Figure 1 (cartoon, one colour):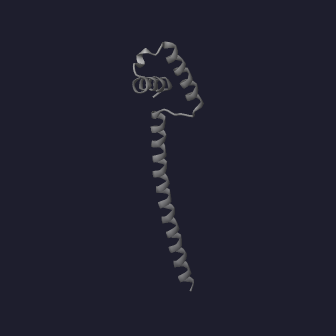
Figure 2: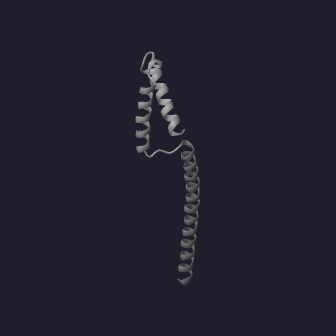
Figure 3: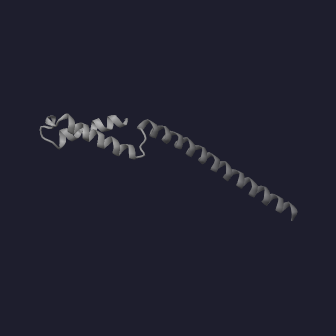
Length: 92
């Protein structure tokens, strides 16, 4: 949802929920509210839902790769321990 949609949705909900007969609000008042909200939203570090979903998918794939690498490292460490143990038994 882009910034204009957020502002429009807020104004719509504001008009429906808080002001009886909100349609009577003049265009000037709506423009002032829209301008103030746009300025406030510009100061926030927001991402779109699409951007969030993409990053969430990337993070999920990264987590899967990390889990796979951790398992491989554990297997390699166990192999090293077994080789080390076998070699130390052969020397004795």
